Length: 252
Image (cartoon, rainbow, N blue to C red; front, side):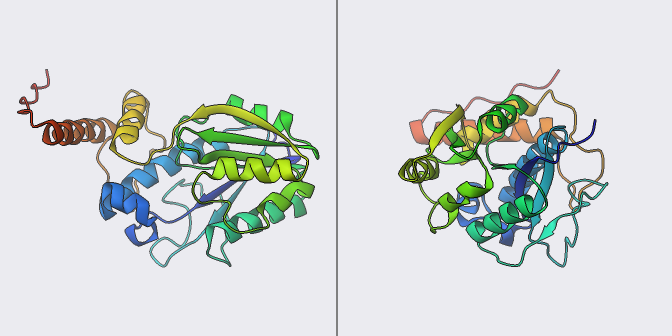
């Protein structure tokens, strides 16, 4: 089915390298593990956006010498908008401007750290957005996983600071100050630590692999990663409560 060029999905992507991961993510998971977790989340977000037939996908990619293209994400290499300005907020503004310059009437930014984002929520956002209304999807921690708007409403991104802290609330307040209506898509969670990672890994245990192509660095199968995450989670809880951990049951 042909893509709808009136709609655009924006996804910001960084290479699967530890030094390209946020300090908060590395603190939560450790540098090497953070890169693997981030890659899994990016793959899930990319699959959703690629398969969404009613919007064109624009990827803002900060390429590196080790990963100069996106074949590590998709062997078909979808192409990308090369990053000129490296802060998240500047990259977002550049990607949004490109979307509207190339003919989109509506654009929706998605955040890959929220793995429960659904296609129906994207439809809800696109259907709701107009020059008087923006769409915002919030995570339970107050950050956003989705922001949808039209070209005149790019003004909510003009002042810096919209991507930090309770960013969903910040953007909603900016929209209201500009006399805009705010439509909220369903609340979900963002992967920020062991508990939310465990929830994500359990949800993908029975899912087929997203891509068959090999990554630049080999990764354990999803089920192995999920089991290891569960063990790590149990060990952490036992350490906090002082309980003696039980031996893992052998797999039948």
